[in-house]
Amino acid sequence: MSCNAPRPLVSIIMNCWNCEKYLREALDSVYAQTYPHWEIIFWDNASTDHSGEIARSYDHRLRYFKGEATIPLGAARNKALEQAGGEYIAFLDCDDLWRPEKLEKQIPLFDDPEVGLVFCDTVYFNDSNYAERLYSRRKYATGQGFAALLMDNFLAMPSVVIRRGALIEQGEWFDPRFSMNEEADLFLRIAYTWTLAMVNEPLAKWRIHPGSQTWNKFSVFADELVEMVAKYKSIFPNFAQRYAREIRILEGRGAVIRAKDAIVSDNLPFARSCLAPYVFLNAKTFILYVITYLPKNIALALINKFSMMKLTPD
Image (cartoon, rainbow, N blue to C red):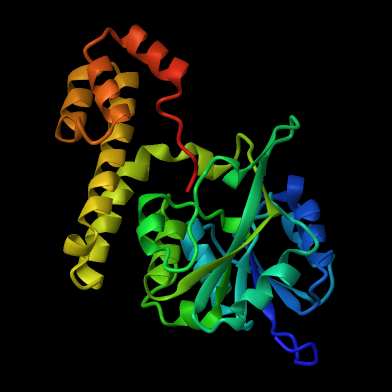
């Protein structure tokens, strides 16, 4: 991007449902951006608290919309996207934060015309002073990242900026069938035909708290994995053949999640039946399968001790 070229507009999608507790802090992190050419598309999903009043207290750069009724998050994000006019699209939930230089450092990476999505490192944090960088222990991929992203959705929502052209070419935006994997699904479809780029700095902060939907919906995660794979088999040529290994890993991950729920519900035979087709997929699956032959209290204690079921949110 030339120093004298006009800077493209970034539309920042903020969806809100009763977010007054953290909202002003999130909005202020956008207004502190060193990159000046942005707009906020603020979709109020029929909040009943003071979120609307807080949002409307900001200037014209925040475009406020309010739905008549609360709808699922993916559908609400689609409503907001319909109002976006920027060349690039970013996302910030109302309990998350950005560093001031986030957009300034990410937008130049779109000078490569093949890049459809730019992300950055992200800090998970909570109100008890816990903080950890996402990629301190987790792998990520750039360039042709579809296969890696299929096996592990390593993208944090507040870190992502998308080229408008990459979004528009999709047959749909956020798939309303998904409540856990709607973000991963969109990012995967973009990564199938576009490359990924990354700023290796923690420019976004993802807040963890008990009210966060992301951390409370693992019960549907496995079912949506199955549905997502079926979807890709129907829209991507030779998907089942090209990505057989990745599909196998995804199916095994779903089996592990179902087995965990079964163990918690004291249904160890069902847990074993879930894991049996994947018992030799990896050491974790094998050990968990063996544990299902133990009494429930011992099985749960071992799972907790070795953190075998730890899941990172998608």
